[in-house]
Image (cartoon, rainbow, N blue to C red; front, side, top):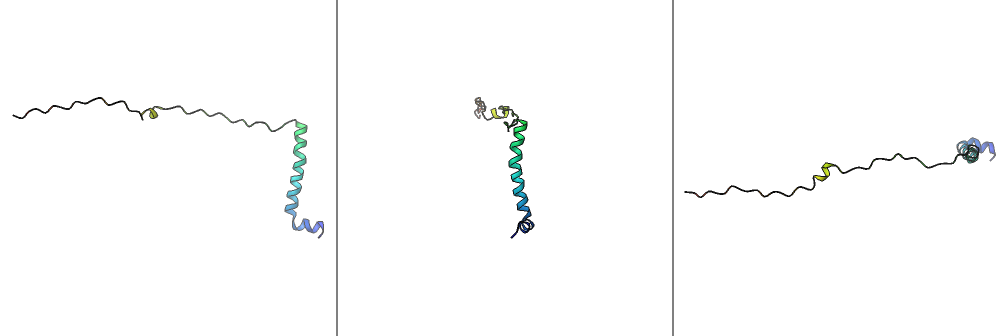
Length: 75
């Protein structure tokens, strides 16, 4: 099997391998010339949730004693 026959049958795989090799060469060269390295990712801070009034509703005040009307004696 010759190289031209292999390329004709497996052109996608050959192209992928050549692209990866080109990237392995180009990326370090670009980092060298532009003096840039991958830096930390800036994540915006999100505010922390604060307890709301609805969460305090779970604690109910102690019930006040209720007085019931006294039964009057029947005549």
